[in-house]
Image 1: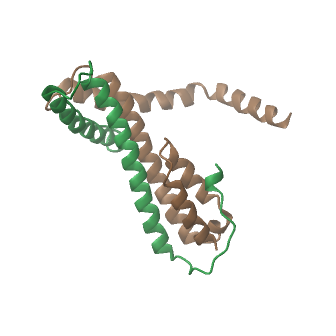
Image 2: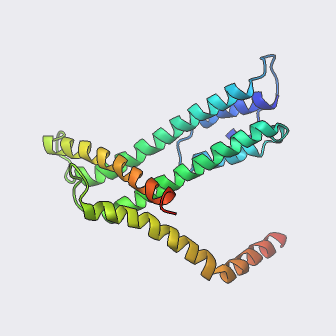
Image 3: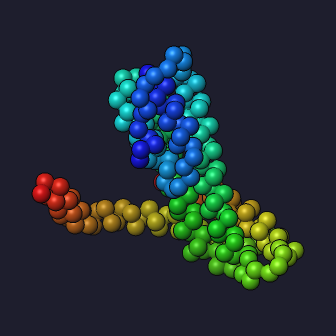
Length: 87
Length: 121
């Protein structure tokens, strides 16, 4: 976890305000979340839709992928409602 | 100094994409001693930490429940059995979680005792 340790202080740059810091944090969290999500969706939809890879993506495979992404996003919503509403 | 150091950490951490990066990241930030001197910041970070952990749990569960419930090729909408399965899946997972902690709390105590003793040796 070396990357997470604080680098030795230096610099004459001005301090970041709390607000700027939190904005940056939220943006980076959102980016990281989006990357993770995309990686998961790629894995799932490849599994479901590309059963026998051919020399190009067929129309069936393309529409499957498109539906798969929609369904996965929908599934995320269903799960999150099931977890955080029905307590 | 603290905030600047954390800012640089942010830029580095962005290059990581491994699960569950967000939890480790937020935990490591909140353990930075200079962050602890700022209670307002600490509280904001803790809120983000909770949000990130909840999102991670949802992502993990969605991945697992998708595998269990969506057996065929994805359609243009979920059948009612599929969406019920997804919803049930999440709730049964929570039931299971609680059951494991309650029923096996003796096992847990044993485990924590062993790890503590192992650390001392």
